[in-house]
Length: 157
Image: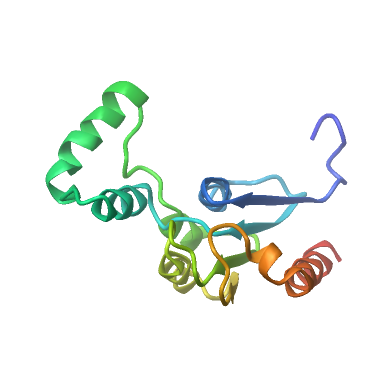
């Protein structure tokens, strides 16, 4: 804010883990010039994505959960369950455009559905048939561009 000033309007945006990060920021006391959030293919919680990836590789992640939580605390100095996008958006104070590819094999589209259902008043949710992880723009550039442009017009006007 010091560099550009408080009159510069900001859209927080991210794809995949970046999308989850900006969604977790949605519950914070953001500066007034942050007008909205664009999240493309976020996971619903750190544990949900760890479990999904581990289970897909044949591990019983429920057995490993206490060890993973302990390692996060010891080696990463954070609590695995301390922040979750699906919980954070319940307290969002800016509009959110949520986008997810329906053919996402890494982060299931269902995770975005859970996020959207957590605060339907603040979240505009769109899926892209046939799109994989983080490639909705490539799957339908025209539609993606229109959604983002319309969202920006709404939040920046």
